Length: 210
View 1 (cartoon, rainbow, N blue to C red):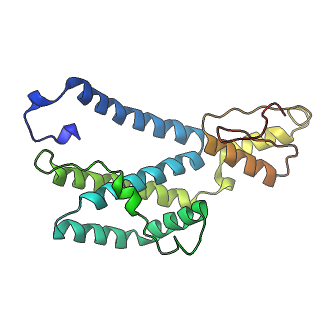
View 2 (view 1 turned 180 degrees about the vertical axis):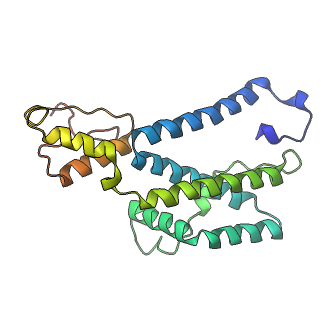
């Protein structure tokens, strides 16, 4: 936000300004690392950022023109937002209480840090955020077409695991940085008929040594 600050630059704390710049770099690096790990992991990151940006725009669209633009954007991307919403319902449970809930909920809006238009160029941030949303929408629409049969890295590791001369007769440990990739691999290995597959991550509660 400090990149859009209206006030005197002398009032900006250099430490905070540098920290915000570093966050931008970290997000970029994280996206690249997750894309390198698996498309499944990358898609999850896209979805999370998509929801955060859409929530921010919803919170800060105050004029009639801004509200109309938000409505038009959601209509244009209705198929994508519907897809994300259906995934949210699968994740949290599709019960009667949340069946009609909006993609951006009141709880999500409450955690957004509101920026005053007297201090920040909110109109510019909104325009730039729409550019980010358009880019992420392109990524997500492409990822929806992607299937495991298109995953060359996955096909290579399954081939190795099934090859008697290479790995089939051995116990194999596969390490990955992200839990989503581990869960994705576990699912695909089981579907490929590989026996004795176990998967653990930060959310695993059973005994890891077992």
